[in-house]
Image (cartoon, rainbow, N blue to C red; front, side, top):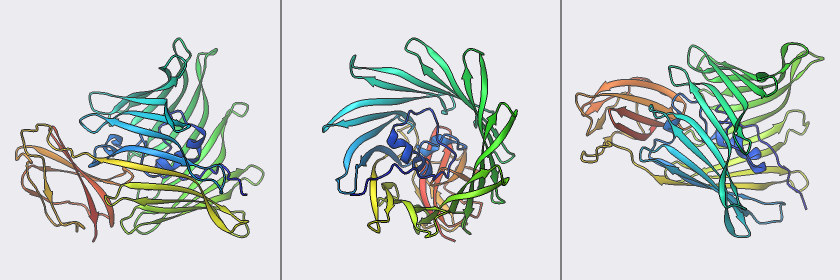
Length: 417
């Protein structure tokens, strides 16, 4: 009988997730995949738009098994609560104990007057006193563009909150992260001590091309290379290869250790990713992640697999099942008719859109996001019955967001040129 290993897939397309959430052992295996599919990433230009869409994630169920001969066991679930503007308020996590759901933890989000996350609090369930207790809270500080400039984490010591760690972010001229610095709080010295940093580089299409990981060495008073991630894209700017290397101090160069190869559906959604050991002479895949989508294009199943060379077969060791609720967001004044848009879908750039309930004297902003939440285009137009997209886009699935006044409206559009 083959015993499954807790393989960690290094699949990070968005930048690392918001680190304020306590993670279980199973999260360590699959947390990167949540970033990969656009969940929890708080470093986008307007991350809350991930939730301001037609479908909001209702819950995710996590299944795992101890070995290949066992059946999947439902281990835990996370439920998501939103306000009437589609903003995520609470993540509630439950553990399955002998067929009974037990409270585990919850993460509460608080927003500022601009509708952006200001801080979040993680509370864990104390079964003895049957109450949630403070565990961790994270404050987000933003620059004048609303981009996160600093992230401070505090831990609760039973009586009061104590500083624990922080991250600082710097951006380039295109508002992409260029540097991320991590610090730990030294209580005795009352000072922040540098720990790690990431350096980000981008290609001519402004897509992430590499991440250099470094650690601070006090004795040298300098940053030292540890690992490197390189990103490779196809002609449609889809990530197709991600390689990971380590720094060889003696040789003074990077040595590739592993890489992932990605494939996509016809709609441009991630379908599969295989992980390979670059030093393996056989060149066989070591691990794999496969995903399926429902009829509305939302993530349905995520399957985590690893290769069993003895049986010459893939073994699935973990499964995530995602559920969604339809949430139509239109005018907040419900005496008015909600916005309805009519357009050719698949859509060709240049063809008109016809939308009712857009006020003629109102200026609207149209933003185009990919399924990971990345901003591809933004334009303004005056309200009326018709308008057109003004920028050419690559083929794929996009989220069109129209905002103006108290209106937020979203549409999923397939671009076909």
